[in-house]
Figure (tube, rainbow, N blue to C red):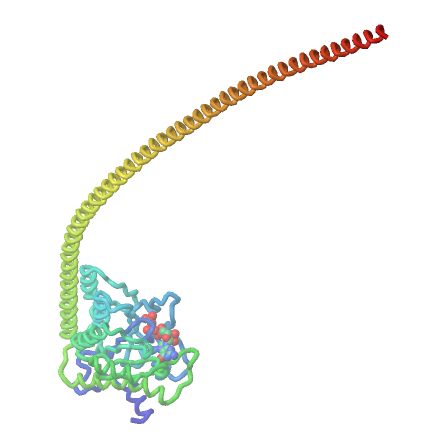
Length: 417
Ligand SMILES: Nc1nc2c(ncn2[C@@H]2O[C@H](COP(=O)(O)OP(=O)(O)OP(=O)(O)O)[C@@H](O)[C@H]2O)c(=O)[nH]1
Ligand SMILES: [Mg+2]
């Protein structure tokens, strides 16, 4: 189909022109879903830019929050052709049960438009909100789910099965597999991502590069991607409108689905919680016994350590005692040795004194003997001197007598003459 034909097809599509007329539907509602920041609002701006001749305008607020949280918090509808309305739903952060429940509630048109979408974690609150939707029931929208996914994002392995289940639930809820729109077409390998979604059950995958304030240059190829997306959606509507439909009945079916889904997830959550609590109780009990066992081991260990330390103390005390005794023995031995030494010294001193005394005595005796000797010698000398003097005296006497004799003789001779 040529570009202009494609555009006309989209712009001129009317539910009234379906084989069985509109069957009670008055608009095609493209319900946009997906993770936050993947380009849902940007897609609405791009669709309006492509379909309404004129300048690029921001209709749906698009961008990034500094915290990485969602920009679109309200469920808002944008009419892009007289038949097609696109709904910018609140995006997913994580595919938790309660976020998914709210996604299905939005998808089933049970959450009011233009009001802040609150994630209801509580089952009862969620069910009451579901009932509130009966105040203004909407069963004239022909719902087409459209899942928006950024090519650059890598879906964690464990979320792939959740995604598959999500697609199946979308089909059960709306009667059609969601059309997958890959944004950021030129920034990543969208063939690979397309393959992944096809493997997860997606029937139609369209890659687009969204327009933005910074990037408004329209090309035929780029615009064709957006128009093709709309054509796929309308073809699907036309395909389903071939069969007789009952919008009220479909709404009831959607509500039943939501009831069952919510109830099942609630029961699952409840039994998960119960299993968790039972496991926790079991673990608590295990922990309690383990703690008791540990305590007993700790006590035993403490007792053993106490015993060991007592034994060590006893050994230390014994060693100390032995040391003390050895010290005492050594001290006694030392004292004995010292006494012995002192005795020996005393003995030696005594002996030395004795020797000295004896020496003194013998010296004195020697001196006495020598004195005696000297005295005797002196006496002998004196006697000798006396006998010499007596001899001398006798000699002198003899000399004198001789002299006298001589003199007398001399004198006698003189007289004779
Ligand atoms: N380059 C490029 N940027 C895109 C594309 N699609 C969206 N963006 C940018 O991605 C950012 C987030 O886009 P939004 O449209 O706000 O995302 P959202 O899914 O509406 O996010 P929430 O409202 O937070 O759930 C914006 O800055 C967009 O300009 C795309 O195809 N290519
Ligand atoms: Mg948004």
